[in-house]
Image (cartoon, one colour):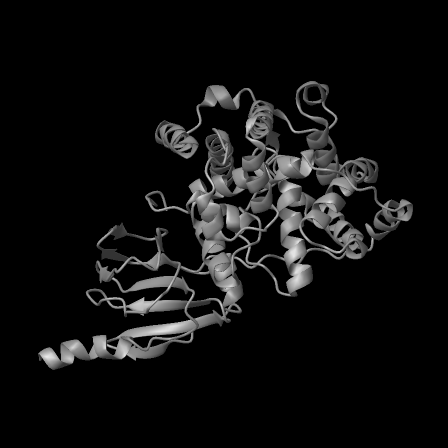
Length: 221
Length: 211
């Protein structure tokens, strides 16, 4: 039922959201992690991650480490990593965060979601000793602009996701947690109902369309 | 790529994001996402849900020297290897699986060819080349079968599948895809059957006997 809503919401958006109007481009601001405008509107983790990406700030990285390391360790242990090895996973994931920072695009991913995906990939690569197939990254030519409205919109979607998750029955939340910890097979996940994704897909989709637009502009110049 | 109409269902995407798909299926999913913005967005949305669980889950304190150790390693960290990019009809993850070399086709008869990319106990993934008008060889699959079109198109009882479209078939779907259009259909196919094309032979002989 939830999934149907998501579907109609995203297809509706998809149909009419073709080229981005010049009016909305005018709202774009310079992408600077230290910008006061962004400090007021964009969440701290995103600001820190942009400082790591753009300025290679070790201080910002240390703050991210303090926030995420204990969570990553808890997550690794819950997904079956022996506690002795959990810190190896944390170290590996945090180094990947530093090395892959150039791939972070706040219009398309929130920091926690981005780090979650790195953590799952790294954990599999480490323990299965095989490299997991990952999608080809979009070629992002250092897009100089950064649409604060889009970033904040995505953050709002993530916070709606958090609310939706907290409203689920404990048994349902438990299943979803098992699924995203990698403990359920595809057919088991199919049995679970109500993955509460809301309208986040269409929001990210919008970010992708903006990026495509920016890329076209870049190549036209 | 604008007309992709068959996408990755949510359960499959959740299994991919959480790393719980056998390698063969994961390769098809990663290749489809590389071709499809709708599923790129869906992928990020599922990762965000994982991110919320990471964010709100219980924390475990890390040992005091871990932070300093990781910070010390930042400068020594190796540069990321340049990712493997799409070449022709083959998106990046597929090129990587092919070791950046052209497919080594093996003939299966009737102009149909295959190139096996990876197989293990629980799954296998191959490229299939089917001349227009030919039927995709029968390839029994007890469970999930994913078919992604890279070139050309095919049609079966469930619909039309063009470039970028992904067909998700369960074991109980008895389908007979036929390549359509002007060019040969090239697909990436993942199944849970190790390698067998056993049942292919009788099917291929059918047209021969009819003549």
